[in-house]
Image (cartoon, rainbow, N blue to C red; front, side):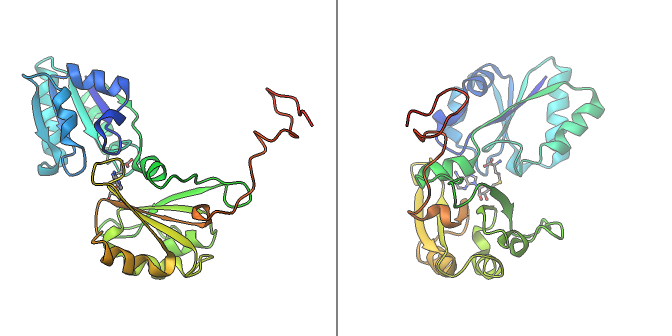
Length: 251
Ligand code: SAH
């Protein structure tokens, strides 16, 4: 059996209880060494075989899983954040299906949630934005046409840009092709929930400059949108004049 597990954004106590339990009992752990906090590996049994997938190809990962399965062992495949975002999990699941190896998936706290917590922010504010765009700049992995940053920027919604901290000049230029202006608030969140976490507040116009100034070029998310501003309408859900399924309006 293979268990895909979301490790969370960094702080070792942000893995789920289920994920921690699976790590504690695993015979083999294959972890994404580029971003998973190694402190999590302290949960593993002393005799657990631990492999770092940053140094492995998909084929090597699969053959390690296959060897474990043949030996009747349990494998945990530990991904950063939640495996469903930029996790390359689908290709592993499809290959396991073809090999007849059973698997399941335990979600984790994605870094976009860790970044909001670090910035003390809410992406969905009434009258400001009710949508969050999760995307990335095209890099060595291309982005399908119609999903360019400039295309999303037209909506002016809250945006979280992954995997792009090394391309802030280009990102800034793309963002300005849409509804954002140089004054639209933005933030660079470096290593959210890690001890070295940094939140740099800036604007779309000063994004690249802020990255340079603070030496942030990787392991960071770029947050963009007016949700980072102080102005918004309070929620209807907790408004005394608003009746909900669970509460009558009192005024
Ligand atoms: N599955 C992961 C994302 C993997 S892609 C998740 O759900 O978070 C790797 C990218 O995620 C990094 O380049 C960076 O943009 C972002 N990232 C991962 N962990 C981060 C953290 N703790 N703080 C800020 N960004 C992070």
